Image 1 (cartoon, rainbow, N blue to C red):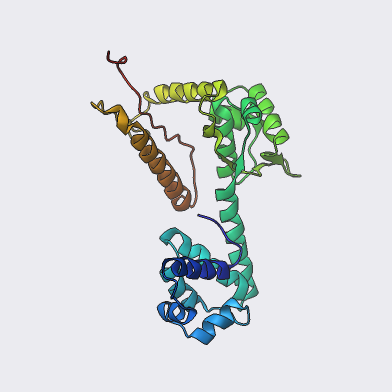
Image 2: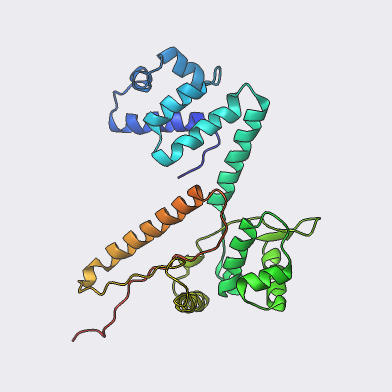
Length: 267
């Protein structure tokens, strides 16, 4: 989902999308479909008037995907709420959402510096800790030495992913994304191997804390790309759901999915 800065852009882009499908589709027809008057729509798009929360919600139902609607309404609130505190709260919500979803893409060299499993886990641990957390506490939580934690924080700080505030608390300054795009990278293979080892360790946990499921299936290799795309879509959907529905996260989990051959190539 593209996070636009002005709710009017969503309205304009939706009109252009409909116009591209029907060259005779007019702005008057668009206003009718949005259940507002054509003059009102013109004034909204020209910036001469704003939207009420009720009308914003009504329009969002007609032009936005389900996961875009709240963002659209918050854009309207940030621009037009009568209450200053409501405008500030909406702006803060928007900034938080953008931070969580836009993230930072690492290049191959940057990822090589933090390709051990605990770097990504450390970033998420710092995200869920609202109070100051010590090197010793991090060491205990991740099961690694204090020296390793200190070095990890130094590397993450050097990459601009973490910073230390004046009160000593470590905070995450950028989300990570697309570090799994280097599929043939030796560093990424190392990371995957380490995560599989963590999965193996978790088998000792009770089933209330982890879940495993395996299906061995006879398949045509022609279906590989389809399966790959479906797994990727599921991973993104589940990650998005957990991010949006974990208001007070209190743990760090790994969602690991594999699809691979268990026999050698047939002659």
